[in-house]
Length: 64
Image (cartoon, rainbow, N blue to C red; front, top):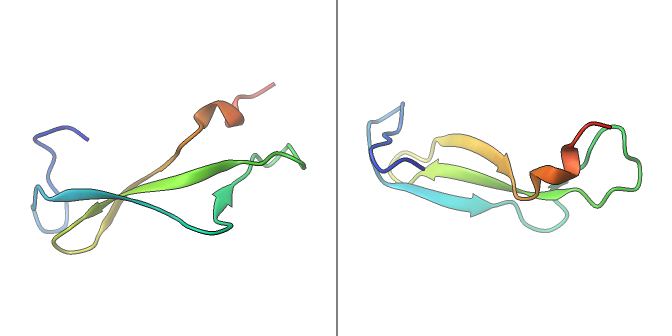
């Protein structure tokens, strides 16, 4: 994230990253057998707000 980014909820600049664990992956809706991608979240370390979700492998979601 941008160095000057602040949490929109509490204004903190302490932003961490987390990854959903286990079988928590996002799969393309139109690809039945795709393995999908892990989901990464950017989280405020002060108040816990999940600021942004992102997939680790966005190329798996390219349209055809």
